[in-house]
Amino acid sequence: MSGDIRRLSAIAVTLALALAPLARADEPAVEHILVFAAASLAESFTALGKAFESAYPRARVEQSFAGSPALVAQIEAGAPADVVATADSVSMDKLERAGLLEGKPTAFAGNRLEIAVERGNPEGVRRLADLARSDLVVILAAESVPAGRYAREALRKAGVAVEPKSLEENVKSVVNKIALGEADAGIVYATDVQSAGGRVTGVPIPEDENVFTTYPIALVKRAAPRPAAREFQAFVLSGEGRAILASFGFSAR
Amino acid sequence: MTGGRSPLRALPIALWLPTLAAATLLGVPLVAIVTRAPWPTLAHDLTTPEVLTALRLSLVCSVLATTVSVLLGLPLAWLLARVEFAGRRLLRALVMLPMVLPPVVGGVALLLAFGRRGLVGAWLDRYLDIQLPFSLAGAVLAETFVAMPFLVMAAEAGFRQVDRGLEDAAATLGAGRMRVFARVTLPLAMPALAAGAALCWARALGEFGATITFAGNLPGRTQTLPLAVYIALETQPEIAFALSLVLLAVAIAVLVSLREHWPAR
Image (tube, rainbow over all chains, first blue to last red; front, side):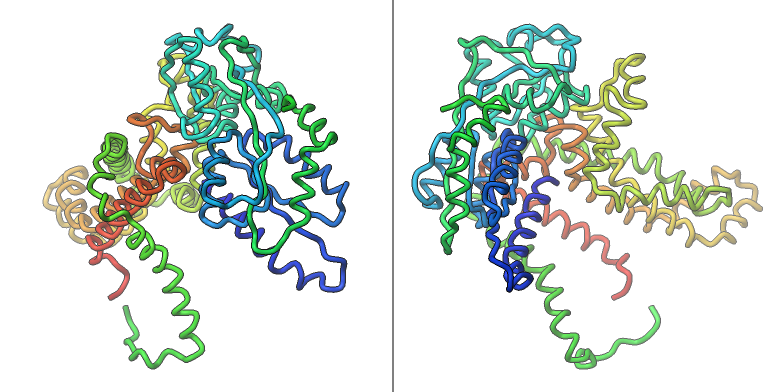
C-alpha cells in the first residue's frame, strides 16, 4: 500500500535524477535532493521544502514521509535519500551505527503528546485515565513507530491500562481514523492535532504525564557530494527554519 | 487451444531479449525471497507467538471470507451465467470492479460504507450496535470484498460450460429447479467452482490494502499475515522474510493444485 507508493516514489525520484541531466543539458544544473522525514513532519517539512526552494532556486526538494522505522529500513535497503529526519533518536542511532550517515545527527525540534478526539470532543475525554473507558474506541500507533512507544510511555506515567482497538502503522493514520469518526480517541503529537486543522480536537496532557520528544536530522552518506542537501539541513536549523517549525507547533531544541 | 506449437528456435531473435527480461523480472524477486529467507532459524521464526497468532487469524479470516464468497457468490454466478435480464452486463462489471480497483481504495470505500459514520455502518451502529471497523468481521468483510469476484468469475464460466441438455433432461424426468441445480448443475461445474474457491481463498489470504485501511491492525483480531509481514519488515525483517516465504509457498501450492485449469499446456 503506502509502502509501495513510497518505494515507487523513491524509484521515480531516482529515475528523475538520472534523466534530469539529459533533459536540461544546456540549462544551469538543478540539484534534486531527496528528504526522508517522519510522518509527523509531513506538513512542516512540506512548508520547509517550499521555503527552501524559493531561497535556493537551484535546488529541488523531493520528500518522502513515513513512520521512522520504515524510513530507516528503506535507507538500509539503499533508498537514495540525501537527508533524513526521524521522530526519535532510536531510529537515527540505528542509521548511525550502520555507518549510513555523514557527520552527526543534530536535534532540530521538539514535540509533546496530546489526546486526539473527535471534533468537539463528544465523548467528553478530559485526561489519559478516560482512555481506559470501555465505551471508547481507542487506537494507538504501533509500538514499532516512535509515536506508539511514546504513547505507551505516557500511559505508563499516568498509570492507565488501555486496550487499543488498532495499532496503526503511523501516527497520521491514527489522526485520520479519529477524524473519520471510526475511533473515539488516540494519543498523537500535539503538532498532529494542529495540522489536522479542526478535523480532530486535542485534549492536552499534563506535564507530569506527558512525553517530550526530540527530532534529529542528519545527512545520508552518498557517493557524490550533494551541496544542496547540506544547505537544506542548515536551512532547517536556521532561524527561518525554526520559525516555520514553530508555526506548526514544534518547540525549539 | 488451436494452433500448434513451434520449436523454441522459431522465436525471432529480436524477441529473445524482452522474453528473457520478462521472465527475469517475474522470477528473480521470488528467488530472492527463497535465498534471503532465514533458513537456519526458520522453524523458530515461524513458531513465535506473534507469528502463530497471525497465522491462525489469517486462516480463520480467509476461510470465512471464502465461505461467505461461496454462499453469496455461487447464486450470483449462476444468475450471471443462466438468466437473461436487463442490467446483467452492468452487474457483471460491478462484480469485476474489485479485481481492478486498488485494494486501499476498496478499504476507503468500505470505511465510507460500513464505518461507524458510513452509509450503512451508521445504521448498523445505531440500531444493531454492530461496529465493523477494527473487528475480525471487518477483516473478513475486507477480504470478501476483494476476493469474491475471483470466485464469481470462475463459477460463472463453470456454469456456462454445463450442458443445458442434461439439465433439461433432468427437468423432464421430474426434478424440480432446485434439485436440478443441486444434483446436475453443481456437480458438473464442480471443478471450476473448486478452482474459483481456491483462487478466492488465496486472494483473501493475501489481502493487505483493504484490510489495514478498513479493519486496522491489531494482533489476534485484524493483523493477518500480510499485515504482520508489513509491520515486521520495519523492526524484525527476518520474521518478515520467513512469513513471505510461507505466503509464497502457499501461492505456489494453490497454482499447482489448479494446474488442470491453466489455459493451455
